[in-house]
Image (tube, rainbow over all chains, first blue to last red; front, side, top):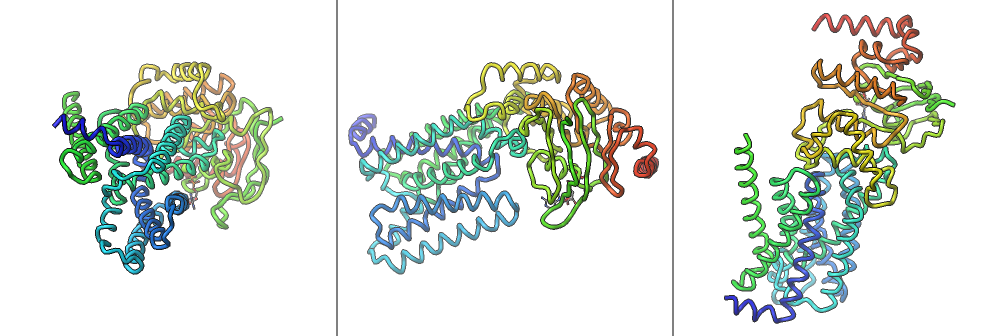
Length: 281
Length: 238
Ligand SMILES: Nc1ncnc2c1ncn2[C@@H]1O[C@H](COP(=O)(O)OP(=O)(O)O)[C@@H](O)[C@H]1O
Ligand SMILES: [Mg+2]
């Protein structure tokens, strides 16, 4: 088995996949903490459906470089969703449901009408659940992904203190003169970038798992923001790595395997937290 | 010059006017209590003073070298994210964010300030504890320490003793009184008219008949007499 792994590791496409997978997992878990504690996790879900709709439009229009279209549509939706979410809680929820389900339905409809590919169901299935496309990345795609993820990570680290403060108490931040709207915008843009990137890795239906699970797992073990952020990044990277190795060795679908590993690690963290809670009582 | 002056301030949501013609001045060292019934617009007034929302009309002037971002704020207790993972130290540090400007990380001076203010509030030994696991009184001290990191001059406190038991309440009041003695100007919203009359130097009454003046003037004013009677009556009925 080790031999098989070593053999696979020598292929550039496997190396690319591992690099991209680890970076995406790292980014999504960082922002996951903020989204989960702000009760915004459903936004990740909504956005991934929007990204799917944009992808459908891009493939119908036969755009060669569809990344930019998908990215801009997703960013605009993210900004709109965060805005409505702030103004009115219930309406925001409904807006997200409408946008996300609508985008999903329209995307599928468009692909069904205009695409004459023999394997339509296969195409749709792979955009929804992730595909082997992570294994067929070109050098340019890998580079773009590296640049964007590194940018997100740097931005996150440099704005970490402000992101914490705004997440914890937005009004207080504003009262000290911090432009909270600008940071919320930054968060929205970073989330969109990650979601579009992650679509390649796990598919649009499974993205929220990548965003939510590591953060929740970490929150069961630690009680300060710094440790939660760091450990959620570590969990996410480990889970993505193990998931990808497993899927290569066992021939299972990449996306669902990664999510499955995340679920298992969440259960372990949950139990650990529970047992520790009992012991300390 | 006065630290803060409100001129003909009108507040409301959309076009619904909540309160009209608020006028008051706060001088350095004052202890102003804002009283009024539930829903009168006390929180709205504080948020307007902090620039968190726009007034319908009127002006807020600040002076005496005070900057808009140098006001310490203790929000009314809301259901702050219940499962938020944050340690006491992280929260108090976040009081320094206004000082940082665009600098991404806190410097030595700010960390020192956090130590001083945690000491002042008697929460140094709670530094690494999780905020959500503290008692109500401890949580308020943490938020007060955070507010102190943001200001040297002016504190705005929105019902700082709501939900605290009597002993902790009087501890909190004397803590605030000490801060005032140290030269920090206080603007506090309170439900508790007795405490307001005991500690405050000035009273702003914003429901029914508007009143602004010193404590002694309030006691003999119509607004004050009526409100005091109601409160006393209400308490007797409990
Ligand atoms: N965001 C808002 N939109 C519309 N109305 C509001 C909003 N916030 C508060 N109100 C209304 O304004 C009034 C005053 O609220 P508030 O300032 O919180 O009162 P207080 O703090 O004196 O109890 C209440 O009637 C409340 O319903
Ligand atoms: Mg209020």
